[in-house]
Length: 337
Image (cartoon, rainbow, N blue to C red; front, side, top):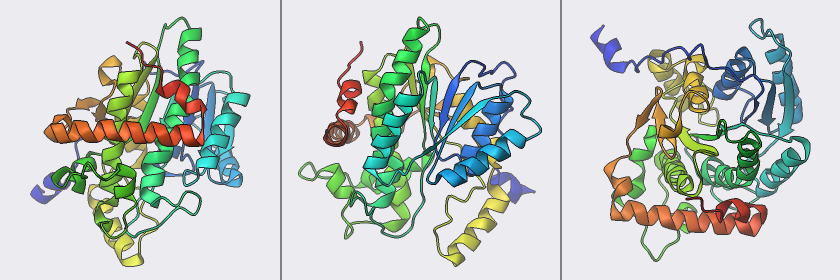
């Protein structure tokens, strides 16, 4: 019993009964399985009017759409739109954002959930960036900048009665990043450091990418008025998903054993995601949520080295976004007091 208590995560309360998404348009990336699919079901159970789901292949999305609509807890008649999105490719991210703006006239919530967990060095064939960095951080950051104008316009069209939400799945594991103990030298760009195979540590690729997510959310929040768009991130804890599906069989087996003892179900873990996009308020702007509560940043984030890395990351990210999609500069340069 003692061992079980030590291994268990804190319970996640049920979502507030008052949380209702009627009249809202909600985007969920990585909706084909795990946390993404479970989050979609929560939104549907709470009367979302339009649900936009992204998958790498349209056929997968149509299958997920059919399963969601057939679920006995889905009583209303929601509109579900399926879009293709491959986060390993800048062109796919840009094409998705362009298609979304052309086909959707409002967006109240963007839940950026898609990600990868890899323990070997893999390079995106589209961008030549290391894959974990590309998918977990860079594509999500560029997509955030591209979605901001539509999120802001949606809130303004509603006379700012309620802000929109841009929420990114993060992880408390960011505090295990190698760059906290060994900061990137000023003479080296962050992007170059993350693409240095010789200096890589496979077990820390995930934590490193999530450090960037945490810094990006903190910095992006400075540029956006929370009365229009609340920017936050959240950690769902350890959840039984197929995030580690690309690992070797022995590692997958060991992972399953740990998950069977300690992990939350996708239904429970996704409550943290959904709450961040409606239950949380302006107090969550620029923050990370864990079990519905704001988790203070580790001291390093606010240290001189942490602030330097955050400033450099913002500059490099905006430059990369502008190089690949000029629309991003509109969101990135719109400093709101």
